[in-house]
Amino acid sequence: MLLIPYGLWLVFSYEYHFLDGVNLLFHEAGHFFFRFLGETMQFLGGSIGQMFFPVVSFISFWRKEQKYEAYICGLWLGESMMYMAEYMGDAKAQLLPLVGGHIHDWHWLFSRSGMLDSSKGIASFVHFLASLIVIFFIVQACIVSFRKEPETVKLG
Image (cartoon, rainbow, N blue to C red; front, side):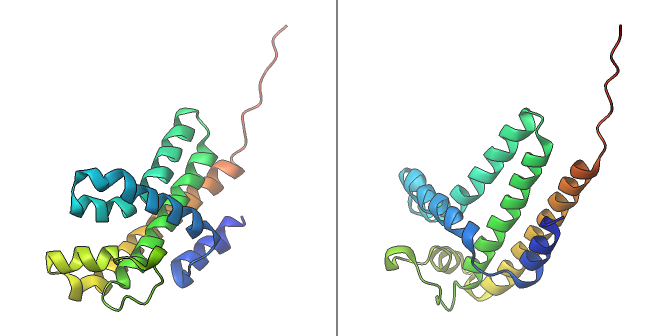
């Protein structure tokens, strides 16, 4: 049940918080691993990296039939997308602090694709999609939490 207020806060009042430090670590790792695939992929690699780890964690738990844990990783994916949306929305103003003061990934990407003026709208859409993901996985986690496990019958 504690996930519900957290999810509502994410959807309606998202701000950088403790989990985003983890997302940032995976984001920076993504730049490193994708740098060999060219400049565009290096810039995209940060956001791909921060989405990759929640997805892989989700798959790992799902395969082990640990649905609650998988759903929490799905929630993490949605939260990470919100962090990405915040970064996307900052592309034109470039007010967010950057690790090492380097180039703003989304400013670079949106500028090259001619979409810099649309960055706020794109960010809002990504936040909306992330909100749907967060809500979906919180509902699923609640369902799994409150579902009564079938009792086992001992024979003999």
